[in-house]
Amino acid sequence: MKNSELRRLVAEYNEIKIKLVKAQNNKFKEKLKEIEHRYFHETGKILKSDIKEFT
Image (tube, rainbow, N blue to C red; front, top):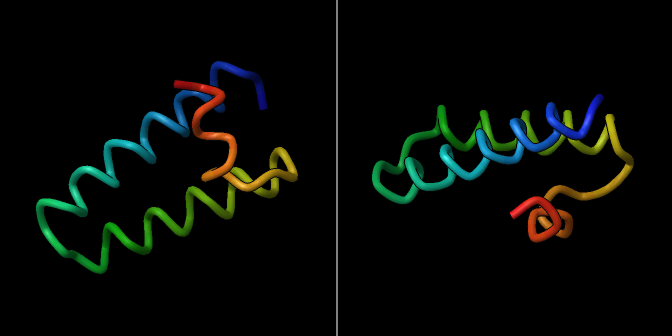
């Protein structure tokens, strides 16, 4: 994955995280887990620890 795709993935993660705070929905929780899983398999790093790198 390119850096731009990783940034887009992190941005999507942040948007869904905000939506999750507003509406406690299992669909959002599943989407967050899916994004974290995809990020880990693409980079080998944990998204939460790298989120500051992209913001």
